[in-house]
Length: 383
Length: 103
Image 1: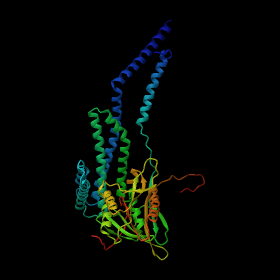
Image 2 (image 1 turned 60 degrees about the vertical axis):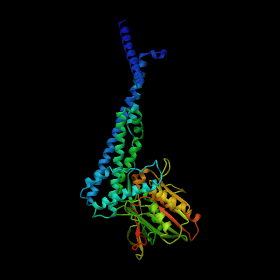
Image 3 (image 1 turned 90 degrees about the horizontal axis):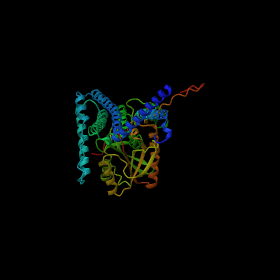
Image 4 (image 1 turned 30 degrees about the vertical axis):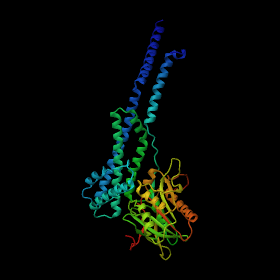
């Protein structure tokens, strides 16, 4: 009887503990404790990501300082500190009149100011090295901005006990980390100086022109060349390489059409070739064609191409080579190069189908010309 | 408990432990971010001869760029060696099949 009583007492205790546990969990669910616990876990995960981002920023800072010192800078630390937090204030957009002109002016001011600063600081090196230093500082600035924004949202979410803000940040964290990781790897690749995925546009322009064709400067950073294809005249535009540089293709297209730089008359077709972000599931290096200006600038260059084409009623066609965000800023993959070969074939098909022999076609190879050189003409005809 | 089945305290304890175990398992699963490692890649320079069209691939050297002239080629040195492309390829692990020489 004593054993039975003892057994009954233990089961009573187990029952009481389990029911109490269920009751506590039930009450906690209604008081929002689960959300607070969840927020704590998310905060912990975001902090882990933030520590990685901070490491990326420090690494990029060290690499930029080393690069500047290698290129003869006397004050690499000051320069890095000054350009790391360089802000770009967008023009007023509630009054859209002349917004493109204002945006263009601000972008140009920014570009000229950074260029001037580096020219004064790095006097003993050439354009390729100066542009490498500029790109490394831009990557550092981008990484620093990502780190600061993530930290800001986390701290704000915790300060105001905003469960949804922290949740959204946690859900976006893998994508943010992927972008930051891409920038971190890109820094090494830019310092190396090999072409990146985004260089496929300038590479296609170079291959279409042929290796012996001389190129002329249209401005400090953009070059153009004239070549022949199947009885037609091709005018090719790209950023000047092999420095890390995207040039001003919009200005170049406008100048070539308006001023008839090569004396060929008005082009009967304008084609832009560029790298485009692929959708998940699409193959890297696959190509697509369409209508419009394939260019990913903030606006001023794209609108120049569109305005020039529409003003002169020139059909505007586009060929794009698909790649991921990370692939666009890292050293070019073989699949992208092969995509470029296919894109050249597609360009030839478009030219044969849509133009006649004797006509002129303007092809703009859009993208960063890092690692893509050209043979410059000794005596240039442009101003 | 409304159902007689759950009146058994051992079963209740079992469900409770199962519930806690599952919570810990889900927490561990979500906290471990399965990172897919990208296979290593190597950068190559593709060089072409303008007169013969022959192509040769070698490892990338700092200073290489597309369009760079590297020298002359052809039987009478009439052609130019030009860098045609620079790209990365995945490094495939050598297949260690018995009897094969490998790469």
